[in-house]
Length: 398
Image (tube, rainbow, N blue to C red; front, side, top):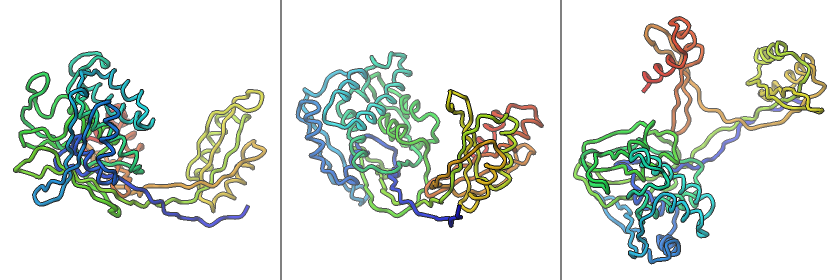
């Protein structure tokens, strides 16, 4: 086997970043995505006129907010499109439609489900029978399906959001006056970092919250990359304190992929002790990772597949080692591309104990975790659960 030189390639990925100056609502989302996608609003009018079997007119108007040119969505429809619909009926409308793709059906149903689950919990009702204004309204159906439809057309590699911003005060709802953020918004955004500002109105709606929840697992106010396109949209509200603007950025981001080699062999006649020893031995000899996978071989014999990941320059020596020190009669070798995040290590003090932190980062996001050995040592010394120590350290990092 000849050693091959390590190769680095650059992968180009497109990210859609929602920069939420004043929260997120469905109409603002659709207006911004129409601009990014280049799709004309009349296409949505035709789609939903057929969807509801009734006239629907959707127009993207130009509005200036503090001198900034923005798009505002206007929706008009016949009263025949307005019916009292529960969640079950809406799911059936979507699933039975021949106008949208399976992906759009899946994504729009997923967004509706998030809202329905929140409303069901808040009002203590069966999810399929819940009637509520956010899901039942025609404009919400249009906003959610349009969002899924336009995102499919744009087809970004990833979608990111800034920190959700919520308002304050009291608003009217179908159930009477309720506090802002609404209970549904608060339920949907559980687990997210949010920012509440004193503005006396709703900023992030349940529909906007569900869009964030469905397409995003975390939020970040930082981003980087080449800006390919920008869109500014606004809603029907205006505020003295800040501009009611949603900015959507279409970014080109670059990641590096490195060549690595994977060495594999199936082994059915070594003890657990021997397997554990050989794993440690491969790590000491320069393997990047070693792992075992349970498999069944000929005659249904239970066995383990040993997999060794290594740099190309280590492939020869580690292959020789596997053939020599294990019971295998042969092995398999393949080339892979490996993308890794930037890594940094730092140390903090936690209640008198030293904790090593691992920081993983790339363009637009950062992840920080306490290292296992640090947490385990504190747990042993304090006779406290590992999970409790781990969570307490994470809290200090926020």
